[in-house]
Image (cartoon, rainbow, N blue to C red; front, side, top):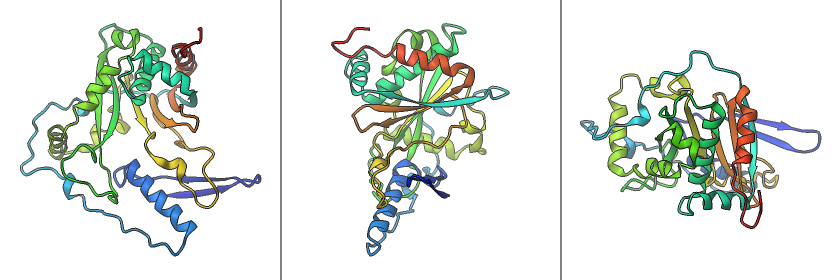
Length: 293
């Protein structure tokens, strides 16, 4: 679905809604880019999308070789609390400081996700130090499979993974190592096993966080950092702002790049916990080098 809103000031807002089973962020960005190219040059040939999903199908017979905690059924809260959302800016110096605090060996995503995880845990309040809490994220399969998925592939080629740690560990520091471990285990055999596991499930929908398989201790952190959406130009110029239109569920976070080299974090939290989360987010950001607290 597409909606174009015009404003009296001359500005425009282009809103899109895409079903994730039909397309992931990489494919959607490619579609947006091709669409924008066509508006700037109507004579330009429109690329033919590759819709062949053969390379992502299950093996025959399906062979599950690993335990897949990312699909473990969890009991979600009975009633969803009101949800609020906000955007938080992180300067390049602050981003460098959080990476340094993690030991400089982790990516910007891993470092920021660890900071978000810690702040969310503290904002919620510790129930038990050994309470298991989870951070879910996704990774692109295109770079993780031995065969090549065409660059013009339009479909969903991402896999979910989960980092798990006791609450005391998350609250005490920056568990970037847990996040890296969760991402690095997504090698080809593990991914093939995950596809086969899903193939064997009679009702795959019950595994989705959208239907309640997302507990009060879970958070989800994604990234649009590598999606060049800020370069999409429909002859109106580059976008002044881009981001998700809304969050439906609490504890959903999205990291976006900023033109200055920092990042912007789109956040959703239970309304009653949002102020605490924002306060912790800023207070626990390490001071940039050469700055005092």
